[in-house]
Structure formats: structure tokens, C-alpha cells
Length: 76
Image 1 (cartoon, rainbow, N blue to C red):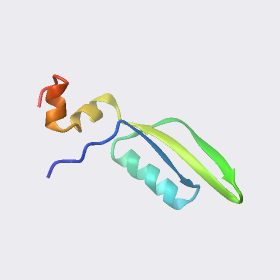
Image 2: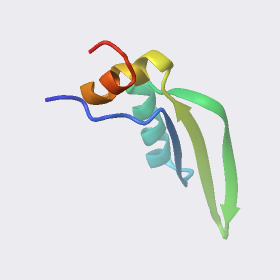
Image 3: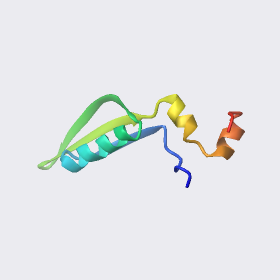
């Protein structure tokens, strides 16, 4: 089974809790890197966190479907 195409950039947002931290940690385990500082905002009594993540260029092109790689002139 081929790995699904991964976005180069992701912004993970949600309540600042263990689930948010798990989602960011999972993305790091998948090869994403933190991009910039986290952001926090408060809505009522809930703290909402956000963290941008990026794939390094090589990980991004390696994850492309073969047809997209060919369209960009990259080897399969």
C-alpha cells in the first residue's frame, strides 16, 4: 500500500490539552518539523493552541504520488 500524499505545511489547532500535544507529537514522528512559535488564544475559558509544522523538502517530494513526481520532472 502506498503512503498517502502528505501536505508540506500543516497548522494544528485545538484546545491546549493532551490531545493537542499528541497530535503535534504524531506529526513530528511522521517527519514534520515545528515552524515558528506556537500561538495561544482564549475563547471564553478555553485556551486554544496552534502550531505550524512543515515537511523538509526531501520528505515532501518523496511522499508525492508517482504521477505528480513525473509532472514535476522528478525521478520515480
